[in-house]
Each structure stands twice: as C-alpha cells, then as structure tokens.
Amino acid sequence: MTNFKSFFIESSEINDDQFKLNKKESHHAKNVLRVRTGESLILLDGKGYGYIAKIKKINNGFVYGKILKKVEKFGENKTLINVVPAVIKRHRFENLIEKATELGAKNIIPIITDRCMKKTINISRCEKLIISAAKQCNRSVFPSISEPLKLKEWLKINKGQCFAGSMKSHKKLSEYTVKKSKTINIIIGPEGDFNKKEMNIMNNSGVKFYNLGIRKLRAETAMHASLSILNELYG
Image (cartoon, rainbow, N blue to C red; front, side, top):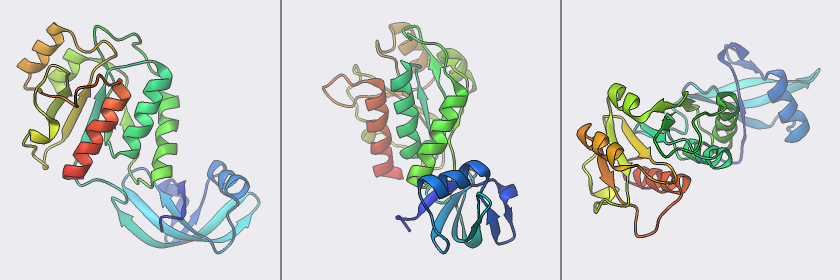
C-alpha cells in the first residue's frame, strides 16, 4: 500500500463504490505519474477519509475506477497537534508548513510577534502546498491554515495545552505531562525569538516553555524537532 500513488478526491466525485478523478488530478495521474488501467491507488478527501481504489478505465482525459475500501482517519495521529508559528520569510515558512503537514499537524495557525519580519502570508499558495504534502505522505486530513493573528489575540481564544520553544527554558518537551485527550499547541517564535513582554504574556496565559538543546535553531527546524518528539511520544 505504501507504494500506491495518492490523489485528492472530492466526496462529490464518489458515487457508491465508483469514483472519477477531476480534470487536474486525472491529468496528473495520466500524464505525469503514468498510471495504468488495473493499477491500485490511494484517494484522499482531506476531511478524514482515505480510500483504497483500483482504476477501471481512462477515458477522454479522466480516470475512473472502483472503491475497494474506505478507511477513517487514514494516516492520522491519535493526538491532535496544532502548530502556531510566527510568520517568517516566505521560502522558510513554506518549508515549515510542508513539513508540519507531513509530521501530522492538524491546524497551522500563523501568529504575528514584535520581531516578525513579515506579517502576511499567501493563503491560497499555502493551501496548495498543504494538499501536495498531504498527498505525498498519505494523510486523509489536510491541515487548515488561517490568516495570521497577533500572539495576544490567539492566546485569548485558545483552549488547548500550549508549549513554546525557548532557549531560556531549562526543561525538555518530553519532561512535561501532556494530556493526550486535549489538543496540543506548539508555539514557535520568529528569527529574533520572543521578547520579554511576549514571554510574560505567554507565561501568564499558562504557556509552558521547553528547550530543544544547546544550539540556536531556525524556526522551521524547531518546529520539525518539536513535532518529531511529540510523534514519538504520543503519535
């Protein structure tokens, strides 16, 4: 199954046990990945279901086939993890959301801090990157991404457990007691880290701080490391 090619499919493109890939996915399947009649596929709806399917025919530029099995939460973690990264330079932020998707983040919630060099993101482009990354790693849930919020605004509406990476902390992420039944939020600061005021605001909001080691990491690297630790412990 791990060698099966993966494609995005809307629920409207499935009728009982039959499917038809849309024009874009059919083109990718036929002309880029060179699929053939009789080949098995993985179909992902982005809303929590994966389908094991087989191609029955390729006709007029569209791929048709049969659903063999429907799997709920296909490729998903047992624990809900949100990534809350400060907005950073575009190419690095795009790397961050791509890897956050591959590592199982449920939602990506960009925040704006005092030391952010950028304050906006291209939502449409980010969503395309998320879908591509989800297909690559066979995830049935495509993480949502929102417009950036100021750190203080997000803390007011957040309801989950919060952990923020900080070089000043003397505690490791793995040393905290985490409630697997509650959403875990991982907050990652900008290039210049959080300032003292932001640290105090987070501390007063119940955010717990952790350290990833003796080296100063880029934001995207800190996110990769943090999610990898959580996946090992609770995934």
